[in-house]
Structures are given as C-alpha cells and as structure tokens.
Image 1 (cartoon, rainbow, N blue to C red):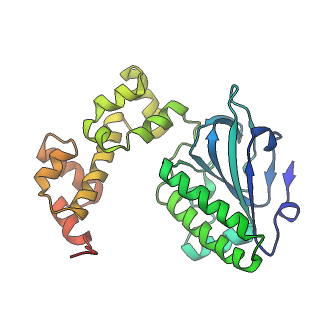
Image 2: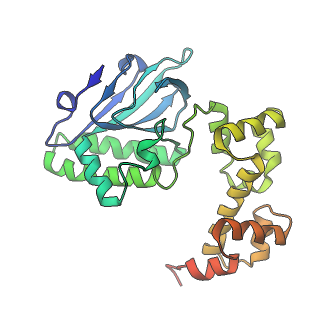
Image 3: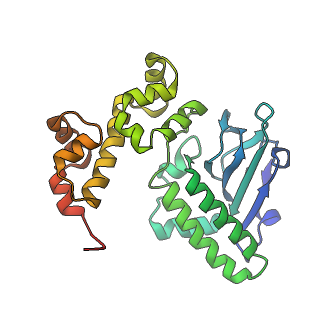
Length: 283
C-alpha cells in the first residue's frame, strides 16, 4: 500500500500533525508513502515493523521515515502506546536539505537501510511534544504562518536530532541496550564507568560486550571513554578547572592515557582544544 500526500497533507500548509492515543488508531498494514514523516513514542511501547525488521520502541523513541521505507505498527504485549506523527511534503524536505547542505544521494540520513532513530531525554521529549502540538493547532488559526513555522520546526528537528546526534540503532537494537545507553548519559554513571554500565545492564560482561560490538560497533570501554571525553570537552570549554582536575573528575585515572585518548578524538591536546574553541558569553 502506498499513501499519497494529496490524500493527507494540505499543500498550502505542507505538513500534517496527528496524535494517536491508542496504537490501534495507527496504521497496522504495511505501507510506503510519497512524503516524509517523523514520529515520537510519547507514552508506552509499540512494535515498529520496518523494512523487514521488528523493533520494540519505548517512550522517547523518535524516528525519521523516508518515502521508500515500508512500515507498520502492532501492540507490544498489553502495552498501550501514544504516538505523535508529523508528516511533510517531499518538496518541503528537499528544499530544507538543500538549504542545510544535505546530500540527497549519499547522506546516511537518507541512504541507510533502516530509518534513523534517536532516543529523547524526558526534557527533550516534553519540549518537542509542546512544539508539535503548538504547530498542529496553528494550522487552524493561520495557514500561511503555519507553513513558515513548519519549515523552521523541521530545520530544528533534522539538525538537532538526526544530523548531529542520531543514535545509530538501525539494526533492531534491543530495548534494554537503548535504555542502558540513555542511562549512561548521566554524570554519575559516566564517572563511575564500567561498574555502572554492568550494574545497569544486569547482564553478564560477555553478553554486554557482544551486544555493544554487534549493535554499536564499539566495546563497552570505547563507549565509556567516548562519554568521558565528551564530558571533559564540556568542562574544558565551560569551566576554568585545570586539565589534570578534569581528567580525574570525568573518571580517568591516568593523565597520560587521558591525553592520548583526547588527542585521538579531537586531533589536539586538551589545552589547545580549550584555547581554540572556548567562547565565553559572560566574561
């Protein structure tokens, strides 16, 4: 089944907003369409059948669907699911892609076998739900203004969630691993490192190691080091703390090892990174 934009999307608005309070209201038949869409799992869980795979999506899952993706939804156990959908014309996305410099022919956002998926934090989800709802109601008050607002909203969504921080969970990543990666973003877990990761995973180290390598293509240690280096870069840019203090504050126990990993990730030393990139808004 192929859904057509002419049947669902007002050409004057260029987009369509929908909130489905129950999963039964969402399409349960496999389909493609000639437009793009993003959808957010606002509450509960659902099974997303996508391009021949079945992936359990939890609250906070945010997915970018391309016209050639074939998908549908089904209930996960007895869980209800609240799903928010924003569909938009292919022409609108093509114009946006040209504006922000996306290559339509080879960018992973558009060419990957599975559609891009990211998991929002509760704060991000709350803010996005409010923005989507506000735009959805603007349609009924001011069509012309809603078209401009849609383009601005899409530019924010695509750049924030699907270019700079898309979580490459295309290969049907298990829900426990998605939850684990989200939990590991917390400061105290980053600092604690491997012990926190294994405790939160509640699985054997061998099983966790295989899962990280299969789905994320990194070892647990490489994943933790990346989190720590990102945290260290934030401290370098936004505090006056000495490099040695930052090294230990983010969980590294060896300054030389920290310098080596930092230079590998950022192609410069921590001091050079701070000097080159620091921009203080408040002197």
